[in-house]
Picture 1 (spheres, rainbow, N blue to C red):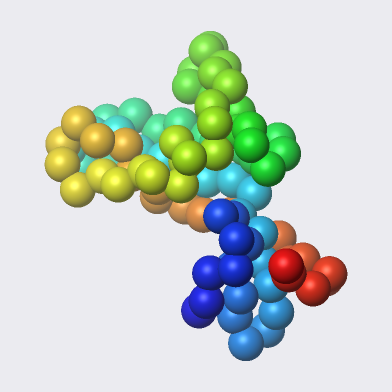
Picture 2 (picture 1 turned 180 degrees about the horizontal axis):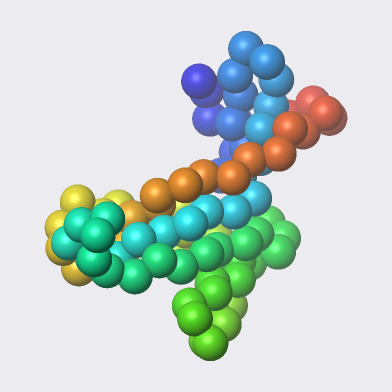
Length: 87
């Protein structure tokens, strides 16, 4: 898999764009909190956290790391196929 752009990924089947993710914050899948992120445009994402909605810059979602109890981790990634050629 090659990275073509901040949220554009190439596989043998073509180019795919990251358009959303479900994240988890907590110590295990049995405890913690789940949130959703949706891509609005190249620079902005919207984070849905229960009744609160945040506008977030794209670097926030692309730098989700996790690996520790109180760090948010990307749990499910949502892609769409891009039919145009990547830059």
